[in-house]
Image (cartoon, rainbow, N blue to C red; front, side, top):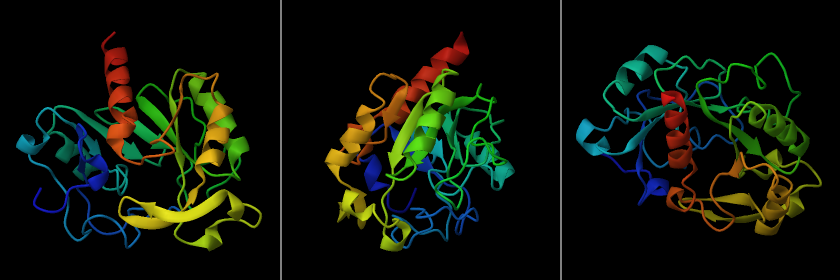
Length: 237
């Protein structure tokens, strides 16, 4: 890797790999990868060498999508001993565990289940399901959590940040506050609101949150590392 490393991963045992170039064509609302504030250029692929990834876990497509240019993604992943794939498309036949963002399509809310496969029985290769949570899709969040954790698949709640206030519906703005997160500034959910939302999942040990109310750094979260180890141990049985 010759360019800037992801500052979110500072001090953590995971490295990024993005074989594709250009914007992701899926076009999820408030996509960090597609935004002008992404931490690196999208004109060149990001492919760590085996030496740079030695002893680390490689996450394929924390930006872009592993189901777009699949052959390129899978061929690139062969370089690495420990690897998992990220996608918002419900196709999970990859040679490694998969993180599925189940509501990553352009609309951040929707009905479950639907034709996009937000709720699916194809869970054998799922490392965890990622749900993009906000204060207006909580009913969907609980449906997703109940569905997947009932199938022994962890669900990680990723609290959305918004650069554009227009994407926050009327009546919900009071739950968000403008502030910086690592590199860029966003409307971020207030810590007390976030804690209240997560308290509703306290009786379900398979529901996690991405980061903490105080930190967005991976070293303070460790979900990806923990849940990668969980599924690899599970698959060895």
